[in-house]
Length: 190
Image 1 (cartoon, rainbow, N blue to C red):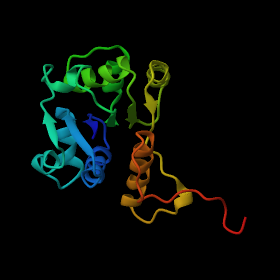
Image 2 (cartoon, rainbow, N blue to C red):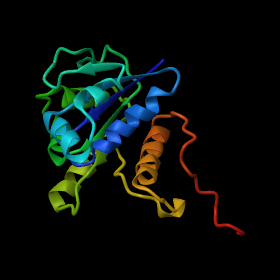
Image 3 (spheres, one colour):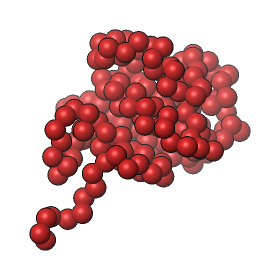
C-alpha cells in the first residue's frame, strides 16, 4: 500500500490539497496522511464552503500541525512521498532551511533526507528574486516544483477542470495513475 502525505500549507489554493485527498480516496492501495497548517485551516473557510471535519474525513490518517512526535516525523515510518498543496513561501523557506518547527516542514524534511518524492505546489505571484532563489534551492535539494498552472490545450470549462488537471499532473509525479485528466496527444489532424 502506498502512503502519501498531503500537507496543506497557508497559501491560497487550499482547493488543490482538498482535491488531492478527494481523488486519492478512491484509489485502491493508497493511504493518505494529512497535515494542515492553521493558516490552511483559515483559508479553507475563506476559499470554500467546507468545514474542517469535511477535509479531515477525507484522509485516512490526520496529524496535528504541532505534533513533532507523529509517525511521519521519522524516516523509519516509510512513506511513498509528500505533496504540499498549496505551499506558501513561509513553508517553502522552512523546508529549504530545514527549519522544522512544525510537522508539515518536518515531514517534508524527512522526505528530502530519505530521498522520497516531495512535490511542492507554490501559490504566489508575482515572484521576487528571493522566492525564485528558494524554489531553486528546494529543487537543488530534490524537491519537485509543480506550481498549479492551467494547461489551456485541455480547453478547461470550469475551475474544477483547471484544478483537476494540476492535481492529475501531481499524481503522475508520484506514480499514481489517474484517468480524469485530458492528455496531450498532438494537434488534431496533425
